[in-house]
Image 1 (cartoon, one colour):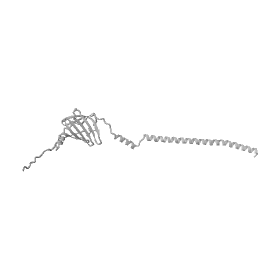
Image 2 (cartoon, helix red, strand yellow):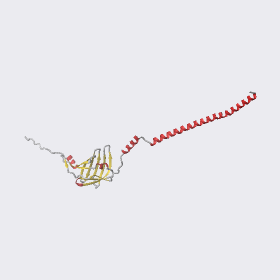
Image 3 (cartoon, one colour):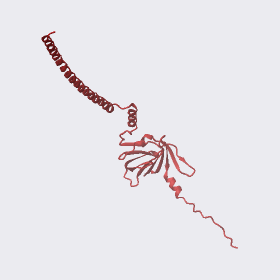
Length: 225
């Protein structure tokens, strides 16, 4: 091969290498760019996924409660006392026309029944109706109440303008006591809160028994000798 031929071949190879080097150089740049873009996209995708996951967790915690907690809340609400409007006029009891009982100490009493629900409806400002022996009806207005640790009390003024006319009610856990002072007499009623069974005692007999004193003096004859 002549020198001119060798030169031509070298030039050809050199030109071919130059042509090939350009695509290779361009390919290398393109791969770097693509890798960078893929890397950026991968980072963005991870951020989006994390935000989405956090949102789903927050939404679930704020809107959905475990069934046990829901049932506990419902039970607590059902145990709350309901606000029931109390009547302006209340009949505490309607009749005491049963047979008179007298015990061995001479104290009279009469048995009767009370609606236990009436004892739950007492309130200040309310007008009470109470039936006394011999069909005497008494009305009184509750003017104050006192709540203690073991009992509740209400005081009422008899409506006939009597200076001594009064009614007081003390409701304990198992028994209620109603004291009545009226022109018809002085009484005390003992009421079973569950059954409503009651007994009306004549306090005049109780006071007479308490005030009675045995002051009898026996004569002792003296020996005059």
